[in-house]
Image (cartoon, rainbow, N blue to C red; front, side):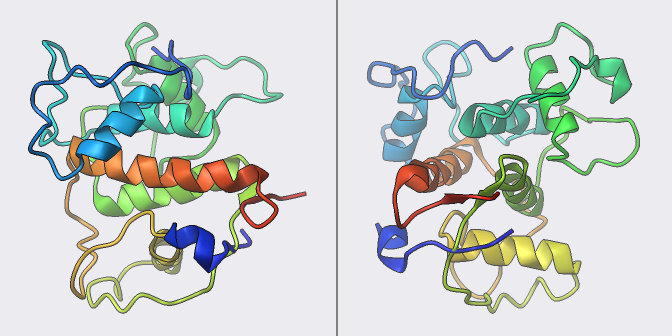
Length: 220
């Protein structure tokens, strides 16, 4: 994937489509969150909704089912010209009528996750490394090339990762989608819903540059 994005610009169930438009987020548990603005942004765009009873649950850990649904909404992932699939083509542990069934199929056919074998493991908490790779894979699935000045992050805890994983971290570091203070990326740590909101809002900002002359470019 070509990676470029103007440094100046950088500084700067699926029933609800991204951009549908919502009123102010109706959650009563986010006012003290550092991710308040990001939570409201992804809610208003229909990317992340609540967990019930006017709660967003910002400190709850994100699992693979939630991440799959959010990525499908963020990137508008679909089957394109593939024949309509069925879940049994991909996984043995996802029922046809769950709230994340469609997202599991779509992300499966777009090779967003690498769970190995025929298990999606929907309730398994996702790590920072998996989120980073899933975002990179989503850009690839949509054939979106992002050009950015390449600066290799000096995280001390990624040297034992695969070359693909290190490359994925470099991408999300240089685009500003995911970073971590200090000299560690902490690839095996889980993420909260508040953290995911921030990550997705940053991703949406980059996707918004798709139509810009100096932003994201579609691969041919």
